[in-house]
Length: 448
Ligand SMILES: NC(=O)c1ccc[n+]([C@@H]2O[C@H](COP(=O)([O-])OP(=O)(O)OC[C@H]3O[C@@H](n4cnc5c(N)ncnc54)[C@H](O)[C@@H]3O)[C@@H](O)[C@H]2O)c1
Ligand SMILES: O=P(O)(O)OC[C@@H](O)[C@@H](O)[C@H](O)[C@H](O)CO
Image (cartoon, rainbow, N blue to C red; front, side):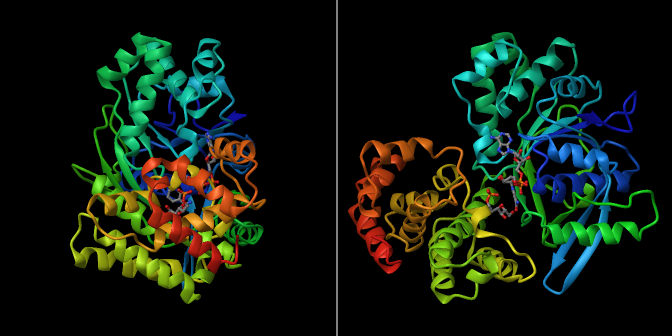
């Protein structure tokens, strides 16, 4: 389904793929405020990643939605109107039409870490004119633009991947090279892949949030009386970007977005302090019977490990002590916010894609620097191993590891441990100190 009040001349200049909670709390929030600051109408045509529901719901209510900024001491509600059209990702006619907007500036992506995978089917799907995966759809969009003789745009990953712009650009170019070298040359000639650090804790929306937003919006002036698509997020928000925008962009710099030469240190600081901390709290917290991040922050078994992980990361991050201390002080407060109920089961998803860059990123940097094993790594990996034995697993990339467990007939944690470590690479599998520490941690969790 596709709809928008602005079809015919005045069309959105940003495409977004992955109409989840985070897009509504972050990029759409910044574009809303940038357009208001400048009086421009750049706006967004948002596409869902996998299911059509979000587009249908948003279209049915006229595209406006409530952003509920949930502080520790109260909520601040705001109507966001930067999304001007919404369609299912599978609606190829709408997708190709959005790419043919002459003054299109850019596309943003929030498709989770798993969405960046390229499979053997992608090239055949592109050749058949029926792209399904996010990467194949992206290529189809770029091809649409090239064959229409329109100018290249920026393709902006807003997912928590290390070096997200470089990873995305590499995957896109490789797939283009295999599908149509003329497209690969066109991409090389002008499409940009800025790298970003994105930060705003945005838990999944609940029915009670939807009821709260509906009651609020019904009391506001304007036509909208229902909101089934609000989003809840913390007050803190940050967006740091490095790279070029060949076709322009909203005036994000006027509303707090920072443009830098090199985003990598910011990205690594966030992935190793916030996201590695989140992953550890998720797996350890679930193993200890907790359900949300704020609950883990009241359990010294979790907070001691979190402090140890931060101290270990600090030794291999390129920031001085004062800057790390400021970031961890803010994180202590952000994680403790009792009104943001961030479910551990949500954060625990896609561990196979996340752990290599987060937990193992810290571990490997420390090993390279000759520093001792940090307690966060064995705790996270032991918690993940336990998690893999539960029915909470939601991980698009973990099939291969589960197949290896099955092929080896490994049904206990002890028998699965070497297979899991081998999956991450020989440096991890051959580290006897790490193997022993994970075993100790499993015993502490009473899991054998
Ligand atoms: N929620 C946060 O706090 C937060 C903060 C910073 C960054 N992010 C980034 O945003 C991503 C999405 O978070 P969210 O809160 O919007 O989650 P969400 O569950 O609300 O939405 C996930 C979105 O990703 C799409 N998607 C999932 N798998 C896909 C695939 N294989 N191919 C294409 N699309 C796919 C879904 O269709 C959906 O639109 C995260 O994985 C992370 O990389 C989230
Ligand atoms: O979003 P993910 O799945 O990469 O990781 C889960 C959380 O750690 C993450 O969403 C944080 O809330 C976010 O990165 C805060 O900016």
